[in-house]
Length: 250
Image (cartoon, rainbow, N blue to C red; front, side, top):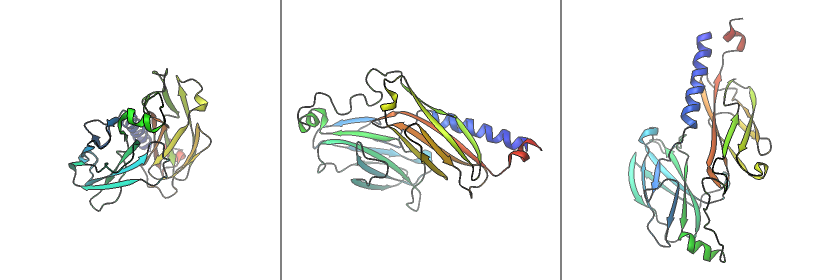
């Protein structure tokens, strides 16, 4: 049983390192994958490659910049095939800042986990956006990666990884460092995989593993700063059906 525990610990560390590293979205807009500026009526060219995720297609969902996680997309386009290039029909979209979210699809068209990094698009360019906002001084996406004056900001999660029995719960804490007034910064919590995630305010959340989860199932908890999606942290949870006494050999 000790070997099982060792395997689970290694799995948590491996997934934590893999998920915690900077990953790219499965698509690019005009050869960029973080922030894109396009003039009004300009071309919005999308290239994608979902083969690394084992997917068979991609859906692009378009949201307003500050839309919540449960909002309905303004537009959705579905493309079949593991690789491709398309021009997105944005000509009838208004000037503004949009969040383009890629959704991986399997061979039956069902949604798959992973590849959830977004690309932000300033449609109309920041000068056009400024005019539309009545002469705002700054471009809408200024400071996308970090708040102004917070170049060394970091988001940390505690614990860094979890091994839970099926049905067991644990509390997760988030700490934002290198930012003035961190309590005023809104965090977004998201669960990828089985279980339930319940935010407890802004910087804490409770995760409960699914009672029916099979042994070795992995869930991922993602946290990021709203308006600054590059400020993020991820935590992997390994679910086991082996009881602690069995693992310790009692």
